[in-house]
Length: 99
Image (tube, rainbow, N blue to C red; front, side, top):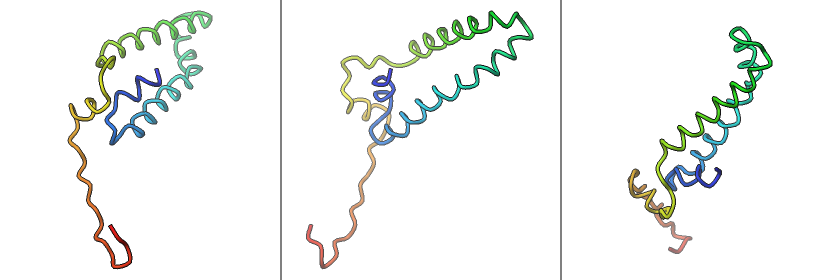
């Protein structure tokens, strides 16, 4: 899963994309206690973990099907398909620095 998250983002934003994707995947389940209490109004409390597990599985499958196939895709191809390259601007050379 970690490799897939990394492969989903172009090089220019890969670290940010991975960080946000990983953090959201940790934060949302952290509220499972609140979800279980909310579900308790609709069903017995003992069944709420099963509902969350099934819902999580469905969301994982849907997310996997929505994402592109990354098998045998070069990482530079991820960069070139969606994002324009960032133009690098070099600072002017100063008298004390050789380029």
